[in-house]
Image (cartoon, rainbow, N blue to C red; front, side, top):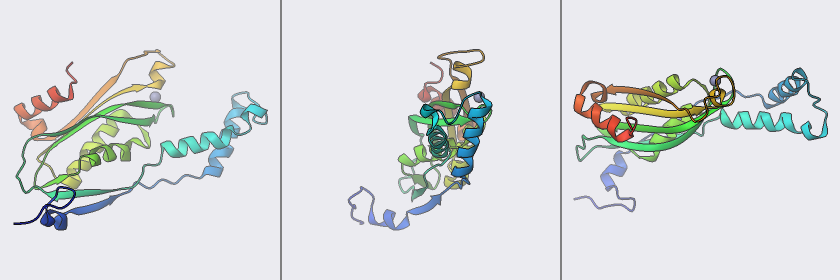
Length: 210
Ligand SMILES: [Zn+2]
């Protein structure tokens, strides 16, 4: 019989854990971005030499670089030795992203669930996968599909489901000015798509029907 290690996993589990380094490369030229922000200020009728704007190009370039650069992480998975075959759901994961159409933020919460196959993964990793794709120029539909697709490819669960609820500043600050309105998108694969009971449970637990 194997002994329990400090983190609650058995020794054999620890040996069998598999880690995959998840990195999405970004090619950001900060100096070029600063020059472009200076040009944008001029184009918008402002004087970039004005005292209160002097440091703006550097700040803006840095802010966009941060919003577009996901942190690398190790996706650690473990063998599903208990044969757990019910839904695992991480709810209300906060995320922020940048709208590809307006370069304005959209932000909200993600609900990510899966039904394990042969392997399970650390719960915090579900939030990491959301961040991996949220840090980029995105449209919400694509972000939703990318998170679901990535989990399907890398964890090979029996089912995976992703629901995103977000407020888009390009909608709430300009255009129709629909303040407080949220956009909901979902992507479901496998049992969460095809099995009525699992699908119903998933959407009930995400609370999207509320
Ligand atoms: Zn937009």
